[in-house]
Image 1 (cartoon, rainbow, N blue to C red):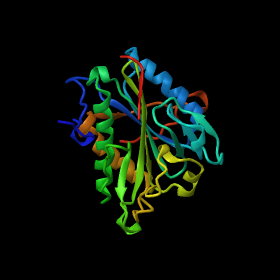
Image 2: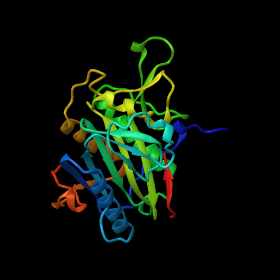
Image 3: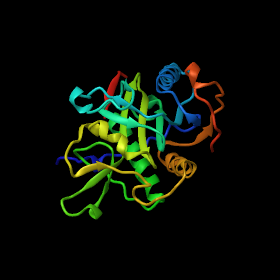
Length: 260
C-alpha cells in the first residue's frame, strides 16, 4: 500500500522530564541576515547541549529567499533584496504582515524522523488556522498549507496560506514556516512562489479570506496549538539586538539534510 502524506504520523513530544522549549517573539522588523546568523549559532549550541530549544517568531522587511531547489527563471522581477536561505524549497517571499516561525528543536530528544517533523509542523499550522475558521489542508504533491477557493470559480482553485521550508543540521531543525496574515500579496508576483506556476494555484492570507486578526491573536493560537504536539514552552529571556546576530525580545506566553 502506498502511503500519502496525510497518513504520516505527527506529534514530536520530548522525553519525559526534558526541559521546555523557549518561546521568543521579536519586536519590529528583523534583519534577515542577522536572523540567519542567530539561528545558526543557536542551533549549534542546541546540538552541543549548551542551549535549550527555541521557537522564534519574527516579521521581516520585504525580501525574497531562495531555497536549495530555487531556479533562476523563477525569480521574475527583483523587486526586493534576494537572499540565499539554506533551507529546502524554492523561492518565497517574506514581509510585514506575515508571521515567520523559526523552529529550533533537537530531534535527538524527540524522534529522528524528518518527515514526521514536517508533518507535525503542518498539523500545527492547520490547527492554528482552525481557530479562525479556516480549513487548511496538506497536499501530497505540494508542500505547505493550502486553502480551497471555490469562490474563484470551477477548476479546483487552491491558494497557499503558509509556506514550509526546513533544514536539519546535526539533528537540530532550522528555518520553519511563514504564515500569511495580511501581507501585500502583490509582492509575491516577483517570484514563482515555491516553484508552483499553475494558474489555479495562488497565494492567500487570513485577511484575503476575510479574517481580520492581529499578530498577537495568531501568536496565542500558535502557542496553544504547539504544546499538544511538541510539548511545553517557557518564555525566553534574550535581550540583545538582531543587529548583533541576536533577537530583540517581546515576552509571550544526524546528519545534515534539507527538506521542503
